[in-house]
Amino acid sequence: MKRTTIAVLTALLLTAAACSKRSGGGGIKLRTDTDSIAYIIGMNVGMNLLKTDSTLNVSALCEGIRDVFRAAPKFTAGEAQAYYLRYVNHTLPERARAYEAQFIEDIVKSNRSYARTASGAAYTVAEVGDQERVPAADRDSVVLRWVIRTADGAAVYSSYERGDTVRTTLGDLKPGVRESIKLIGPGGRLEAWVPSAAAYGADGDETLGIRPNTTLRYEIELIGVDKYADRFRRGNLRR
Image (cartoon, rainbow, N blue to C red):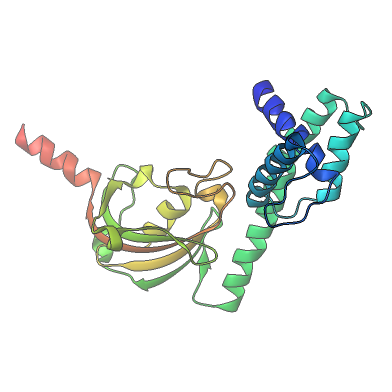
């Protein structure tokens, strides 16, 4: 944690010259080479910060850098770290959860075909499938195809595009997905909006490209179910 904080502060310090100067475009360098390098580093840090949080107050950012160079920061290093961690670990997630709750509530209100699960996921069933084979136990095996999208409709993962199926146990699925799949049998299809707390949470999933605190929309087709109770019986019969 300490190394991360030092790295962030170092990157911000390097943008001080950029914050205090203005430059024309067209590749014209600043007064000196070192000023030009400082500005370029500032551009790089600025572009990365823009990707991370486009709502940052640039004036406040530059003020913090200038105050460090003046040896008159408004926070001590310890206070700054504590405030930052509290904001990242508590304030932001709380805001995200409140936004998600309202977002999914609006979906349910606008479309009466949607209902809610215990985890807060909103689902609508297109096909119920074989109700005699609905998965219920966490050790039941399921075979499914799905498309996972973000709230803005961008596809994160598609079994159809990849030409594959997902084979797993019910218990290994994310809570919101697990609850939803318990509503259909083989041949069933549903759509579910899953809040981050019932999906990938505050960590997200870097491999899938899912950002922290992300609401996801799942389009799920249940292909097959192998109930644990049936596997257990088959195993005993072979003995």
